[in-house]
Image (cartoon, rainbow, N blue to C red; front, top):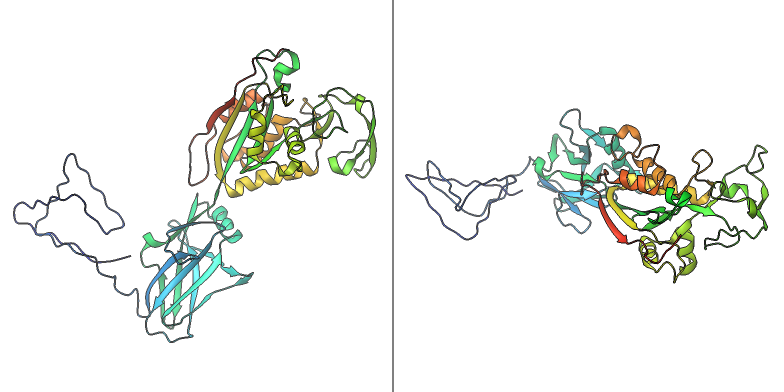
Length: 422
């Protein structure tokens, strides 16, 4: 940070008119109607600020940069950062001891262990009175964020020691590094049942719910036709299909383990009791020639926009897109849940005590990041329908630092079809 002073000396009235002006300071506030008026007891001396004096006997200054040596005051967890020092009177090859701390205004400053290639580093080698350390911020920073309960960021400075001098750098607190998590966009897609639906369809079975974590799309639905792999078909072939219990993590034959290959008769399957699968996910994957776990949000949106009758998508209800931002650690909890569900597809059922369905899977994945005790973005236990989830999500807020407390953005991306009849 540059230093220096501006001195004003005014006898009676000092008036300066200008189109532009610069102020060198960390904090500056001014209010004006038509003009900014500044008064002083003396005069005004204006000029380029001087460099600040050395921070100590051996230390001139310290500053944070990115990996390209561009000065920074903030960074996201996972990025590569550097801390530079400039010294005086330190011989080439001499080492500076350092410890990275998170500034804590209400308690003791928290130490941050810095590692490079899994080895702790705590010294900076000086060459030509300059040196720096570099590391990739990671798990140690996330732990500090969680342990200190400091909210969205930690503020890093370095305690440096050489011979008998110990000093905190950067010299000014305003130059400490604000470190916070990356943000991830969560997108929930909800198809509401068509207004002409009746019976189970009107209750929610005809609608659907899916979600994307970043650009990775996930959803869940019933597998009525076990051999069809990707196209919904409520007409059963009557075939006996071998099913691996491990794949679904279900003890189908009730023998006390999940290690068997069991035979399932398709005629016994219904929306009240069947096997689960990615619903739109498998249909999209079949069209794209990829695996269901590789489907992207963009591919899902393009699939939804297709004419339901011409392309056989069965998406003829009104579709909404709900967007909000979360911290990367929160997104990772949702992602882990979905990856596990795709490995073990479980049982699909409209009855929650028998299995899962599209809305409850999306709800459960979200609550991995927002359990009840957090007090935000909670979805009620009774929510089972797409319409109920849409109503709950209207109260959601973003939790990332970059979009903190912003309300969700809801967009209707498809009108219900006017050529569909029950």
